[in-house]
Length: 558
Image 1: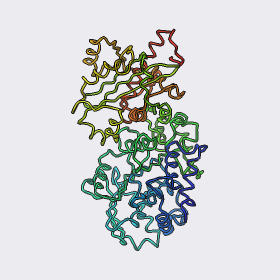
Image 2: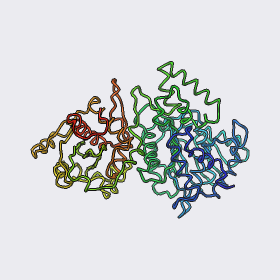
Image 3: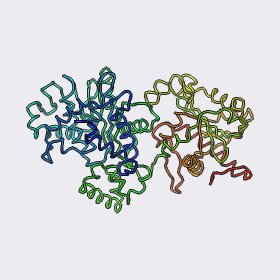
Image 4: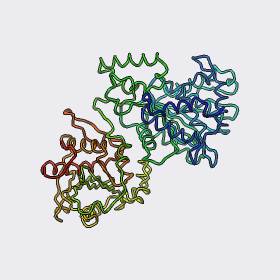
């Protein structure tokens, strides 16, 4: 049994094919990353053939309760990929599991609870003696479903039955005395548990507490695993959103965190508006539908009803397409990979003698502030952007946002100024010093009125022209559109800045009733202040170009 002959490897290869549009962008990225490990091209990780053979033997002992065959033969392709990745990907230095977090975002009726049960049974048969397993779910009913799935598989598998003791609130593997306890958030406290492996089921209906409580219990453990599984939910305040966001940043390469494995079965942004007609939306959210025509046809029937009846739309889009739907459309601003194509090395000589427009996004005193400087040259928008945050908030923001601010500060992407609150004096001095430091001529400084009056007064007292840029969709739509189009055409260049890339990855757009799109801070998936300050600066430059037609301007500005 070689890993390259496995269904997991073959499925990953199929996913990674450039021409394959039945899986979305992030599944492709994860497949490519894992294949690098499987092909022996990763310095820190490898696939254990020994662990793989053990998993195969155990799956052959399990009976599929519905198909009446071995689990080895009846398991879905994506489940093979998930299981092999989680259990068989190991660290070279000590042979411990490489992945500490596994995230599965998948539509309803793709056997996610069933496959979660398989993972738990495999874990109970392979983990060290006295390990403890927990599943967390929003309520007792959901928590019971996973326990029932575990029980069902054990009961129909003669080779396993005698090795497990099943009680109402506890399942014990008698071989190694491993205990699995299902927990319901509504009934059980999560603190004080020691979870070698935990699974959060329907995480889209959970806040962060259960997952954080489980992770806190794992701090002293050396071979821990957390599995986060859910469909999409019609709310923007749940732990699944955070986990998916972290996973996307890892896969996009803007967050260095290799111990996360994520299968995010959601439609690509470009497809989402075509959900009524494009079958790829169904395929990308439902891996089972790719090879199961009955499942595919059932989802198409549900789609027809969602098109006809508004009251069925939310459930269909959230649960069967993994598209958040709350009436107001929300979409990613731009693919961060497209942004990164526009990255250039810092060249101080480039800026000397340039006319520049400056955008300022002042935050609350204990949060991130940003300054952006933009200019036009040879039909391209050039930008240099800085972030500022308080010194004493670096550690807590690093943990809360999953962004290594210490590393970003060292790289020059941002500054830590002030203690508990930002030193606005530093912000003012930085803007006033741009002309001398970079040899530029500051034409205007644009600002959002919020928190900015005092700073603006000081800038104006030093002869800087300041312009209020109202944070309204009708005002922000043109520069938001211009910047996006410039990025897509590679007519945008920014001095290398990892934090700016993270901000672009976070950015989400909404549109008003007049179809004006703008980056919405409240609906975005994290900090976007650097994108906002850049858009403000682009607005000023755009207005100047429109007012001064003799200037050389090769980009469409309307």
